[in-house]
Length: 410
Ligand SMILES: *Cc1c(COP(=O)(O)O)cnc(C)c1O
Image (cartoon, rainbow, N blue to C red):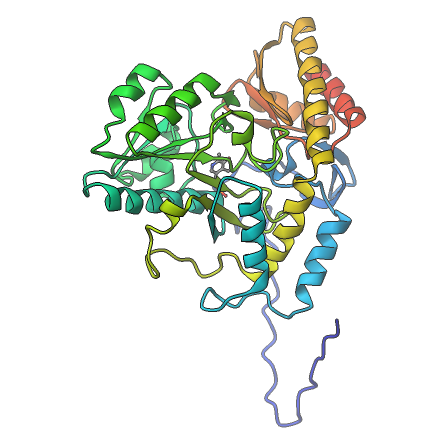
């Protein structure tokens, strides 16, 4: 790659100097929507992060399930550099580009899906899935067939329709009115059976393992029930695999571990190795319900992100990596259960693969902060649940070291 910089000609007016960036105390120039840890992170390598003071952390948070391959991965870095060779970071969806078509073909080849729509985040993937489902439902029913049902404990994103499907009052209340026609149901067969009316319901959306809602594994019997009822009543079954998909459970797609095949799957977090990207996997019938112009996004599936995602997807689909997640995940479950047996501070352990929730007696935020002090990064999922989302490449030895620290700070 070579970059040519043209010298300004003598007649060129002086280039206005950029205003020096005003040093602001702390993060005062950022909107205060996050509670951030105090020390800035300046480096990542493998499964460790380094802060501005040079302190190193074992990272079991993975940028919230994004950095499945860890940091500074040679293959991901090379994929980014190789993608730049074409000079095409972006062309818009007015033109065909090869990387997006190859990525779509790879996703289709490895899944139930016939077609893929690319977007830029998880919430956007779910909002798009709702549009696909509603348009499809209208083509097979009347306009009354538009309701979307989500489940108690769900998290589907922060935009107006995805937050309407999200069961967190604090995320919803300040922003009402939310998108209409979206209802949260109990995770209960009888209630769902009554709510899933063929005439009015377009789709049900489910995280096979609820992430933000406390790492709750949805009972496979409930998923099988939902599949049977939605098929009978021509309701689209959407799996939100944004957090639990792409290898995290030890299966490439979480649905493969449930015995149920949905009609739509949404993906995002780890898909492009940390670059923003989302995807909606669709059956032919649902995909073709939308006509040109009915949905779109400027950036979705651009050549740079799609090239990197193709590399990441092939790495995550590697049977050796998936076996590592299943085997080491089974060991991790045993180690967490043993910890529960030893410690009165641990009340319950739930999860699969490299996605675990640990209910603790102390406030989860305090335990997360103490673990960070001790050099281990974990997440919370609710007030009393710790959440572990290690990079999928983390070894048993590294996980063991992290668990010792977590048990100590408990
Ligand atoms: C993170 C997440 C989302 C939202 O993704 P964003 O990229 O933050 O919009 C939706 N669903 C699930 C299950 C998630 O974990």
